[in-house]
Image (cartoon, helix red, strand yellow):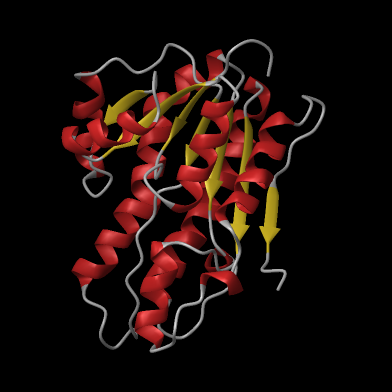
Amino acid sequence: MAGMATHVITGAGSGIGAAVARRLHARGDEIVLHARDAGRAKELAAGFPGARTLVGDLAEPDRLSWALSHQSPPDRVDSLLHVAGVLDLGPVGELTPKTWHHQLDVNLVAPAELTRLLLPQVRAARGHVVFVNSGSGLRAHADWAAYAASKHGLKALADALRHEEHANGVRVTSVYPGRTASPMQAKVHRHEGEEYDPARWIDPESVATTILMALDLPRDAEVTDLTVRPGR
């Protein structure tokens, strides 16, 4: 990307999102960090001098349009990085509609809505939309029904968007990390009753490396789907 690129990032507070934000910020790109509320935005901005913020609750996708209309999103978006996600495990026999809705809203409907709202700016930059999916977007195991459904849906969103926006010069990438050392992974281990050892899983920095690779690829090519597995 020539000149200073502008990246909008969700989930920059921890894990993969934080790693990507640090790398883009360190190289002098402009980053716009999404936050669920003003307090969180202030915290995020403090960690990244010069960064801008966008506030809106991904758990309430219906309100994102209103929230963004009261702020100043960037005029052009070189990349929109959907990294935020929520996870709540349980068997189908026990998952409530509330649990289903929360994961579908944050993991699928909100990325779709944020993409819709920022698509003019992404098109203007002939930019890139990156969806951090999950191994669960390709296969579903016991207790993972709702989360996996949201991530299977995210793959469908990315695939359709890629076909729709190809003629506009917009690139679309889905990244499917295996288990990554993050707060979410600690939660999974609690559910499984297992001891959590971050050293066993993928370092978020390694996933960030793959995302930057996709972003920085010359224009003659596009990474569509990329699976990243633990190497240990």
